[in-house]
Image (cartoon, rainbow, N blue to C red):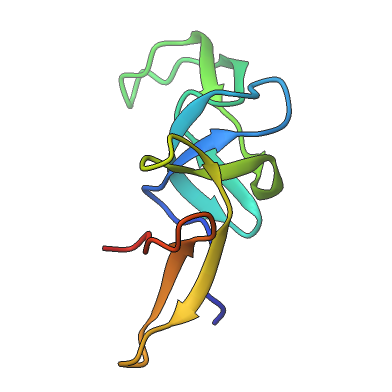
Length: 106
């Protein structure tokens, strides 16, 4: 299986779309789509479920955003960055920032 450039728990910044410039943490990755907290919110009408104790009404829910519209956030340079994958001497694959060569996975 190929290594993904963006994973769950990564700090990302949106580079295209209605939420451009916003930052968030990846909650879930499905194929090429990401679920990011407080990004790409949509108002959904939810039916009440008394058995589960859920109230009905209108709720804001995160919708999936395409991976091409986000970039990983580099805290060292304080801006969006591209990610590359390289193999270390011990054979382990790691992700690294293209701008400064720092390893993402620690």
